[in-house]
Length: 188
Image 1 (cartoon, rainbow, N blue to C red):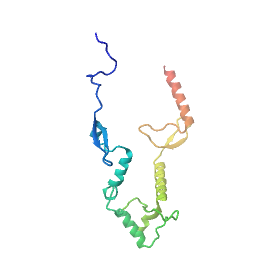
Image 2 (image 1 turned 60 degrees about the vertical axis):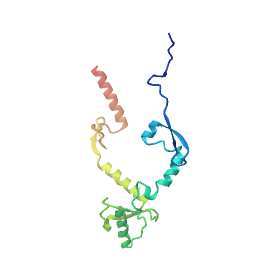
Image 3 (image 1 turned 90 degrees about the vertical axis):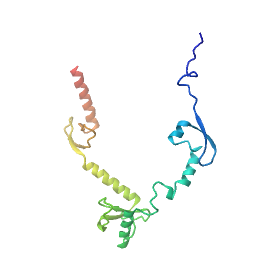
């Protein structure tokens, strides 16, 4: 009787030669061998990451880019800047006085409302900081009040999932876990 080999043998379902298909790199036209499944996924078109980057810089710029909007600034931003210019207000950040990367901020967050009282001239960094402060404030306002089941203090927290928080701090949390463990041991 022939001796059985461990592992995959020829004819076994797991024994398959990796099927590679020869094709040319789309950028440098160098011959490459690509696994068949990669071609089905739509990749395996370039010999390396450098060729892909060079191809992308040539073929996905300006008009060929996915986010191309005709080379014009968005309509609402343009209208807002025109409104500011018409009233001869300088395009300088109203917070830090920078003149680079100026953005027109809509105070009520409605980009169609270009009333002068709704517009504010900001630089990019001050604009981001302002939105972060607004987001932080709205999160704090949406917090709910709870009473700690350990120390009976009231505290604010956000509801996560279906269960509300029961404790106000890590110390109370530790005490809560100790008590829960003690209660579960008494039940048995």
